[in-house]
Image (cartoon, rainbow, N blue to C red; front, top):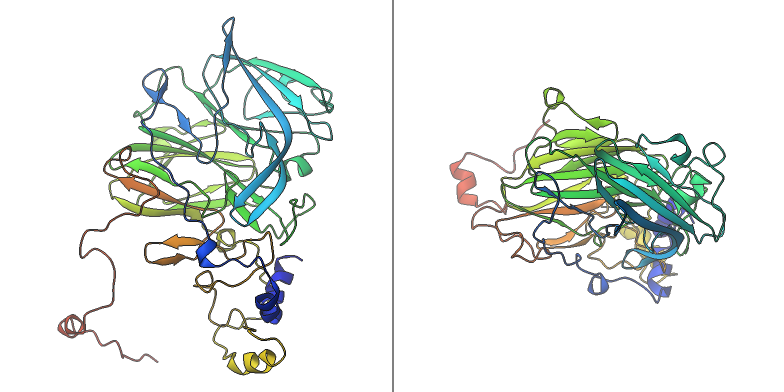
Length: 438
């Protein structure tokens, strides 16, 4: 069943689902946003450069052997949960997708062993790095593939600071579609620009997982229906907790199969300071609130958040903040479905035509869905359901980010939340809510 079929199924046979699915999701069993508390940033590079934090992820540990940083990646199948209600058999590194973020300093000599526990060969390409040709990881061109059970060694010096990625170049359509990817950060030997207080890495990605399936479809060329940050869909995406007035860097990578992602931040503006090609000169920067992250690219943004609160951060492609729903159903917005419902309910009790009022509030209705699927799943917010899911997270700007619980909601000062207008004030301001146009 694809997205279109699912939507049609929901529109035409919703009553069957309501009557027949024992594993229905209801608001009571939807997990709240994951807990997150900001930790005091660790200094890991010259000039007070702080460690990169990978929300929902980890960092590759190093051993220092004779002045060389030695790490180990294991390519392997992993059981992965995108969000409560959707678990799949994916592939990744060291037990996770994305794999651990690799973090080092310009000038470091690194040796990374790659062990293959997949059922097929693989390689690792160090995306964006300039290194000896034999270390570039393209199967057949630069090396023979790593057969199942083998361990290869990659060794090179990191001679250029920046934000990079790693992924296979053997059967990449399958291996990347199943989640094999990771970020690679090289801090400069001498810090550049204003010092940042927090540094985050987020890998965007798209998947096709039909409702009820256990494995992402690697043959997909369109109709991707699960969109993620660091392989998590909201509400399972960990929020980014930062301090008011802090300078923050977010490194965005995109190893999606087909789609670019315009990532939009609310409540602030930023500048693009880097790509996987290098640093953007100060003279070339300009303020933005959205940044397009093309397939196979990284974008680095920096900003200072002055306004406290819980701010949305998401891909601005509207279908990328939904999940496994289709979009080929007839438009029913504005239709009166009561007559349809009445007739169908004679055959299918509890039948409900979907989409006649749009999709807002679908989660609050607790609509039953097929097992192992998260269609139209958002999360709970302080004012009701958040209708967005998928590639969505929350930027939490706090006065004391290390002391406050990042999973808690912002407490708004009195009088600063939009609410129903006072009729007396409407009249005083000369506003007629019953005014007609046309």
